[in-house]
Every structure is written in C-alpha cells, then in structure tokens.
Length: 307
Ligand SMILES: [Zn+2]
Image (cartoon, rainbow, N blue to C red; front, top):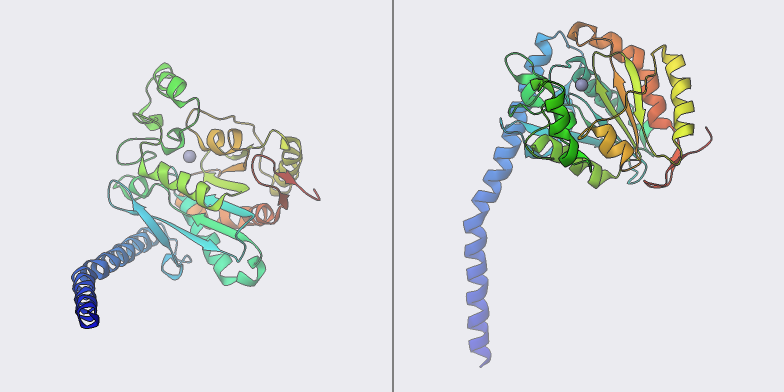
C-alpha cells in the first residue's frame, strides 16, 4: 500500500514537472517579448526626442512598467517613485499626441525625481509621460489616437451617455474632439482609469498645450482652499489661472468633479518642441510645490493642510 502511494506520488510529481517544462518556454518567451517590445519602444522615443532636439532627457534610464498596449501596439508606460503607498500624486503627459513639450516635461520630471530620490522618499509619485503614443509617434503628430478618439473626452463619466456624442455633434463634429463610440472604449482611457484605481491619487497633474493657463477641478468640500493655493501658485509662476470647466468624458470631470481628487491642468503656452526645456525651467517650481502640497484624507474627503 505504502509502495503504491509512493508510485502515485512519483507519477504526480513527474506530471507536474512535465507541465512546468512544457509551459516554461511560453512564460519566458512572453516575458522576453514584453521586455523587447519595451526596449524597442524606448529607443523609438529616444529617436523622436533627438529629432525634437531633446538631447537632455534619458527615457532609457527610467525603470518603466507597462501592462497595456495601444491599438498600434505601443506600450502604455508609467514609472513610480517614493516609498509611500499613500498620498500619491499622478502625472499625465502626452494625452493629446500633438502637444509635444508635455512629453518632454514628464520625462524630464521623471529624470529629476530619479536623480534626487532622497528628496522624495516619503512621497508617492507616479508618472505616465505619454498617454497617447499613437498620436505622438504618427508621421504627423495627432491630438487623437489611432482610432480617432480624443482621450480627454472618453472617460466613463456619469454624463457621457447623455451628453458626449450629442455635444460633439452640436459643436460641428470636429474630428479632434471625437469622444469615441462609447465611454472608456480606448486602451489609453482604461490605462488612466487603472492608474487612478491602483494608486488612489489625492492629486493629479495633467499637462497640455497650447492654451497657456492653469485650470483645476477638485473636491467640493475643500475647493476654496485649493483655489486660494492655485491663485498663489499662478502669481508665483506668472501664469494665468482660468476656470475652464469640464466636459463629458474629460479627466477634470472624472477625477476632479466625480471623484473629488485635486486635479490640476497645466496648459503650456505653445506646442512647439523647441521651447520644451524653457517650459520645464519655468514650471518646475510649481510642479514641485504641487508634489509637496500637504493633503490629508482620501477622496472624496480630502483637505489641504497648513495652507
Ligand atoms: Zn490637450
């Protein structure tokens, strides 16, 4: 009886080993192929950066993560700094692929945080520098993604079904603002939603161009404090503050209005890539102040402290 058990056990172990070695190549292969795809993507980004004269950013030096790809098979990458699992700030760049300097600013910020990690030990900083790689890397950079969707109109906001398509039609069906056939239809939107769900940021900074202002959305409970803080920051940066409002499917609506996250939009003065380095210098102090802005509580009950 004992011998029989041993034989059965041995067969079971043998079977497990066979299954393990049968599947091992596919696991190794998929890991290698993901890592090769990432390497290829980063070198494409480096080539594109060189074309724009962005010689002082180092996309290859950052440790990127990705779990999703776009329709054109570009990895949707992000990086994460700091030891804290709470108090996260999320940065989003290149949501519109033709707003070129926004991508530079986000990679430059990632370089800066990586090179000064001791300053950000107790922080949680998540940077997704290029939400719309398909638009950014297309022969002629485009606002929309490969499917022609404006990613800042595709968030699954409560008013999307009733208003997104209707407003787009009423405003003349401009292809640059197409919200998609349904909410969250795009991988790039799901990517941003997943980052918000995973990191539960209390603060978000999304960078756009070329409208030249700061805009914000946030928790109704403490919007006044945020507004006062914004006024101070705008004065210091000599950059106008404008309450631009939000749209069906926009980030300000999804994150700021519906989820009560402090959501700041920085609109750079132009989309010209040759000004990118100047813009980083101009806005770096405001960006660092936003990282350091002390906020307590979790959405929807978050507040600025010591303001
Ligand atoms: Zn934009």
